[in-house]
Length: 450
Image (cartoon, rainbow, N blue to C red; front, side, top):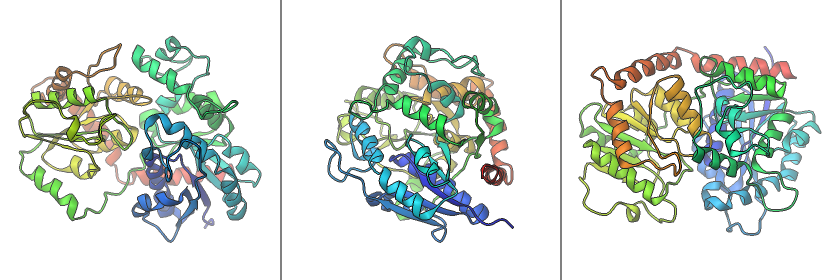
């Protein structure tokens, strides 16, 4: 019996990354009693503590987030600031380096799993720790998006040399957004741009691991392993346990109970995304046009304090609910009344969608999401991607209605095809022990690095 590993986690200061790292922490604790040290901004521990299923094995390490000029007092995570301030959160995270090095020196973990801190491999190596670049996005997206800083918009629209898929393409608007994102970075001369930082993480780590699985992305793992000359492994879908529901969550069940089986459209955009007001209004009007009940879970649009103030003018049918806060997504997707899931194509949300029996409508907004949508909709045929303007990237109300109607057309139309494909992929993920077998294999691969 080999002794348990000591593993440190240092995720990017964003809720979606903290939760994804906690999910794999739970799996590693569960499958081998491995000791996990989870470094997280001090005041944000309360936001994720409830997700820790093995508090005797997973210890939170509170980080004092240094003050950065321009950041609001108390801001620790990306959700605490408007989008243009996110580079300052990167600066704050980089300033925790001395604390991280002290922790590695003191705790002597075998491994550190990280994602955005390009300096971490150098820090960990001083103390003999191996580093694992744990990607919370798809291998297909990493293979496409991690480019040289000299890549033009035209380059980003096309697959890089040797890329395994010919079916994935980006629109001009999507490629422009990636180009701009890649060139952002913390203020200050000599600071790495976003894509340089991620390239350094991939280049300098000992191993890359993805929240994904072989059946879905084996050719992309091979592509990245050749590109970076290192092991690239799947961790499996790393699905979270269904959360314990409290009394407040019961209201969603009660609302859904009012409707017929598979009649409700559920639409959600994850913990970070904020729509433009005009896009938000087109979405609501498009859902109205379907004539079906709907629930939209979305942060208030850019520039709005609440979802209510951003609602389209005129009288709505009353069939829909628009909620600006958190909703229990797994409950929404597993309820018998929910028939369609309109998703922004965040990687974790797509896995939850595949596990459900809902028809998937793909509404990718930015970054990795268009790649995920082309993979799921175009390559695998398990969802319908909503049409949008090539130049402005806008989804119109007519395209919302068209995509939902198509997804729910089971009379021999495309809806029937995607339902059949979806069922096949769901069956793969539902296999007994599917998730656990990947974690067990990953632990063996970790040990082989030592």
